[in-house]
Length: 406
Image 1 (cartoon, rainbow, N blue to C red):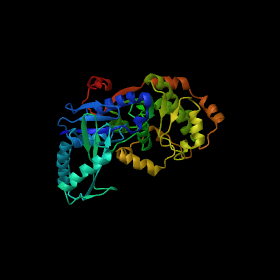
Image 2: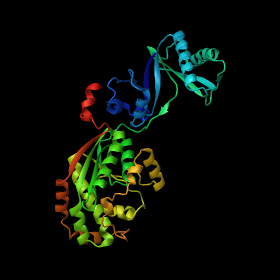
Image 3: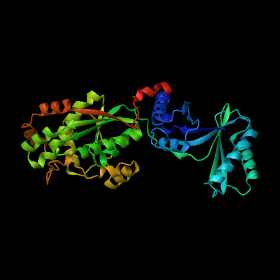
Image 4: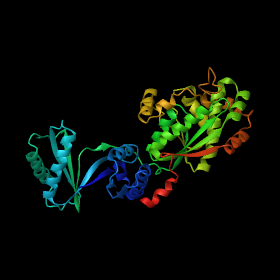
C-alpha cells in the first residue's frame, strides 16, 4: 500500500476560475514548511492534494501541516489498486493495525464516496459489502452509523481506491500570499502578534514593522519583537522584520506636546511612518492589534483621530475581541509567553498618567504645528533596518526558490 497524506481544500474549492492559483500557492507554502524533508513530493489535483511521504516521519509532517493556512482537513491515506477483493484484504489489514494502536475501538462504519460514478458498485453497495467483510474479520466490532469509534473512508477514483481513517482539522483560511501584502505594526505586546496571525489566515503576506526608541527601549525589547516575528513564521514560512528608529520622534513629541496628547500624536506619527513605508514594501494595507476600548488610544474617538493622517486601509483583526479571547488565541499560537516578558516597548515610553480618550482634531493640529513632521518621518524611514526571518533558521533560499520543486 502506498502511504501518503490527503489534503482537502475547503474554502479554496469555492474560488471558481481562480482555484488553480490558490491551490498552487497552497502547494508552494506546504513545500516551504516541509523544506527540510527533501524526500517528500507533492501532487496537486482539482479536488485534493497528495503528499507522498517516501519514508518521511508522518507525525512530524502532520504537525507542520497544522500551521499551513488553506488546509481544511487532512488525513493519512492509502492508495489501493482498484480491485474490490484487494480492497477488502488491505482494509482488513489496516483495521487490524488501527486496533493494535487503539485497543479501545469498539465500533466502526464504512463511508464510501465516488469520483468515478460509473464504478460497478454504488456507495451503498460498497458500504454494505465492505462493512460485511470487516464485521466478519472482526466480529467484536459493532456497526454504528453515528459517532463510531472508527470510520473507514473509501474514495473510488478512476484508477485506484483511496482509504483513510481519521480526518484532522486544518487551520482553514487562505494560503499566505494569495491576498497581497500588508504591514503589521508589531509592538511586542499580546495583541499585535494575534492580529498578524489572523491577517495571515486570510492570505495576507506581512512585513512586521517595529518602532524602537533606544535608550528608552532596550535591546531585549527589540529581540523580543524579533522572536515574536519568528513565531509568526511558523504560519507563513518567512517574514521581513523592519526596525524603525523612533527616538528622535518621541523626544520631539515629549518636548512639544502636552501630556494628555502624547499618546494620540505618537500613534499618528507611527501611522505616518508606516504609510511612508507602505510603497517601499509593496503593501496595500496596515494591520495592527487595536481592540475597541482596551486602552485610551483605542476608543473610537482616538481611532478616528489617528486614522486621520492616512487613507490607507487599516485592518484590525482583533478589534471586537475581548482581552481573554485574545490571550487564549495567543496561547494557541505560542506567542503569549514571549509577549508577557517585561521588556518595555515604545508605546510605554513617556506614557502619560491621564491620556486623552476623546482627542479633538483642531487641538491635535495646533500641537502638531510645533513638530517637523515631514523631517521626522523622512529620517525615520531612511534609518530603517530590515532582516528576513525564516521558519528554518538555516534556510538560505528565498521563498520563490521552491518553485522548481512544484
